[in-house]
Image 1: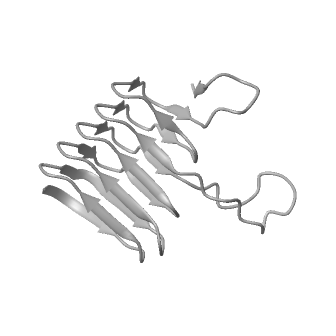
Image 2 (image 1 turned 135 degrees about the vertical axis):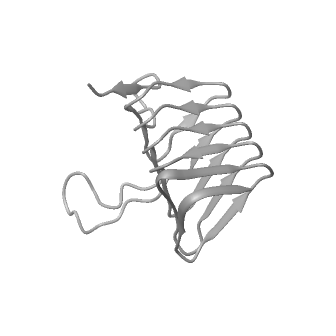
Length: 142
C-alpha cells in the first residue's frame, strides 16, 4: 500500500486493503469510514484519488484494479428516509464495484448499487440501485 497526502480512517468497523493499493490524497484527503460492524474491502491494484469518501454502515466492496476518481463518494446507506419520518434509518444496502471499474471524478455511488466488471462511469455521474419497475439506471448530472 502507498499513501500520498492525508488519509482519514475512522469508525469502529474494518478496512481491508489488497496488495499494491495506492491512496493518492496529495490533492485532498481521502476518508474511509466503516461504522461498527461494517467493512470496506478494497481489492488488489486499486487507486483512489484525493477527496474520495467511502462510508459503510454494512458493506462496500471494490474489486481488483478499480480506479476511483477524485472527490468520488460511495455509501451503502441513505441515512434517513427520503419521505415520511426522517428520523427512521432505512436498512443499508451493500455496494459492489466489480474488478476493473473506473469511476470518474465527482461520481456518487448510492446504496444497493452494483457496477459490473470493466464498467467506465463518466465524471459527475450518480449511480443508484435499480428499482423493481425500471432497468438499471445511472443519472448524469450537468
